[in-house]
Image (cartoon, rainbow, N blue to C red; front, side, top):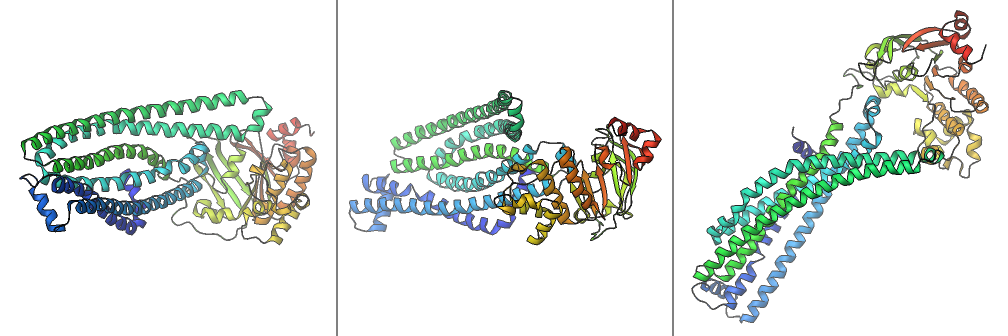
Length: 592
């Protein structure tokens, strides 16, 4: 399906409104064709004597107005000019509002679909691209659909009908002048074709450069604390200036192309107009054409060239908008490689038995992060995963909720391949606490309830109490209605972590994934948080990742990962006694 056909599909729900507006447009075109006629009759039927050239106009006015004076006829025809223009303007206003509303509705539909699909795509997709680029496609590239509809399809229809009807009237008036006037059309078509592909290419470059500007600005402002700490303000401004300059250069190139193409088109129309005036004036001098007819023909020529010019700019606007729509469809065409199987089932509970068989995973085939991992976690068991940086710990537990799917091997939950379970129901059975709890720029209440939106106030408060967060929350001016700031900036690291734990308590899922939950905390806060986490872990199947060996040494099972493989597993004392990889980590932490 072509890009434009795919775009039109977004307007199917608004077909009835489009048809209604189209009918109104036909009426507006009819009034536009009538606009020059009252003045023609003023010239040929009133201002000039009823000679051979102007007799027809005099007879027509006599038929319409009888014995009215010339002054009265002029006034009536001038009023007709106002009425015709007013009616055409009203209809154009109504149709424009309808078309704009349809375009904005389609934009809403596309943006929502694009954002929803981005939300559903696996983390591997988001890991491979900048978040600002995805945001740019949702916020800005999507606007191309409105351009394609309001400046594209509607303009093409209106201009096409205007061209056909104007051409028909011009042929009746003087077919020779019409042919002379249309002599430039093949040259205009050639000009449009020449510049169209160049405009699409340059428009695509602009979209990419503007996306880069947004990325640099977003990253620089999000990291402003670090920028200030290292005194890198000038460097950040330089990076932004360089990116913005590249965007400026791309815009200048497109503007130059548009201006050159517009010059060519206007010159061609000037040639056509001059040729018509030359031949038409000779006809008037020869007595074969009235002055009024020449004037009305000139008006129709303008009415003919205006839609031709609009079609030219429409073609270029479509090429520019096509670049934006192509970037939107690139996302929508991206296959979800962690999608639900056709026969996937819903689960409402789980015992929590997790088993990984010969699991292999890599973000690309050339670099495997996990290599044949075999691990079993029994229901209600707590298993700690330790190892050096890059050993694959976080990647491994990310396979349980299907943030990624393994390249080879399988992950089972209660003996069922997780690929055969619907992702949403699978993730409903899992709570996650990360190293850096992500909070939204809203209230403490809404952040805790994010894990279970229907929770009551009492349940939210109970979860906060179990996470030992209630005391500091009530000390804030607005309690649970207090705003946390962007990314929880109004709270300390420990406070943010307690809210993340409160979320997990509120969700009350049977499986708990903990990814470095205390690594960013000082020892005192870590000890307090670990007491809370141990309360959270009670009765749940828990997978915990940490670099802090002391935190997990006494847990019932420890799995040591090294270079993407399971180096050894067992209890802390057993592994120390073996003198292997775990013992090395244990002694390097000065624990024995």
